[in-house]
Length: 123
Image 1 (tube, one colour):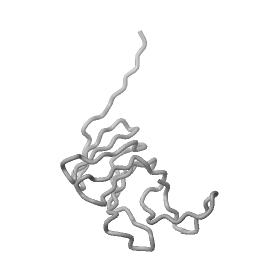
Image 2 (cartoon, one colour):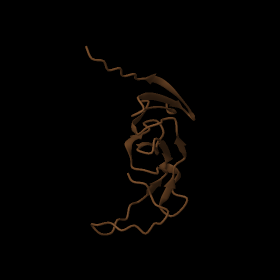
Image 3 (spheres, helix red, strand yellow):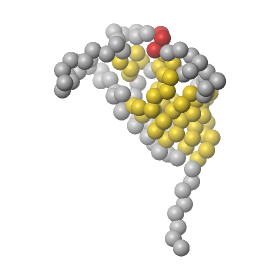
Image 4 (cartoon, helix red, strand yellow):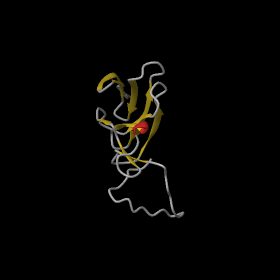
């Protein structure tokens, strides 16, 4: 997943690309996708821009084929490596990032569950 520039005139080296939808929300490369198993069409993604985006694909695009992020979560201070929805609770998900934080989010509230501390010493 790559950020969608304001201009929709994209040129691809292999020729034309015509996706069904474009997801707009991240400022840098996005990955770490997780579909909500309890709410159809709800998708999370992690990103190099330190954010997590939530999209409601079921709501459809408001502008052409572009779907804007429903919510952008900004609790991490480094690259977010992965996200995952809880298997039973439709509004609960977790994320991990290079800031060594495991964060849990319920609806719009996120909190740090675990902060890894790495201490190195020589003997």
